[in-house]
Length: 75
Image (cartoon, rainbow, N blue to C red; front, side, top):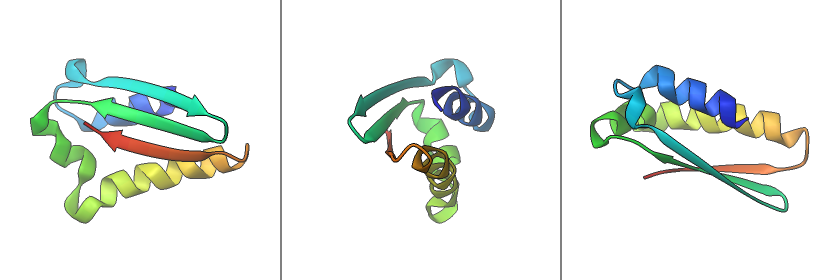
C-alpha cells in the first residue's frame, strides 16, 4: 500500500525528489504522513480536496479487505 501511495504522489508532484512518505501502523489503523514541497501541496489536495479524497478512498478500499482504516496527513 505504501508503494502505491508513493507512486501516486510522485506522479502528481513536480518535485518528486522532495517527497518523503512515512507510515505508522497501530492495530487496525494505518497512518501515512506525506512531507512535500509547499508548492506541491495544492496538487495533492486538489480543488476542494477532491484529489486527496480520491486517494484516501482508493487506499481505504484496499485496506478494508484486511479490516483496517487508513489516514493520510499532509505536512
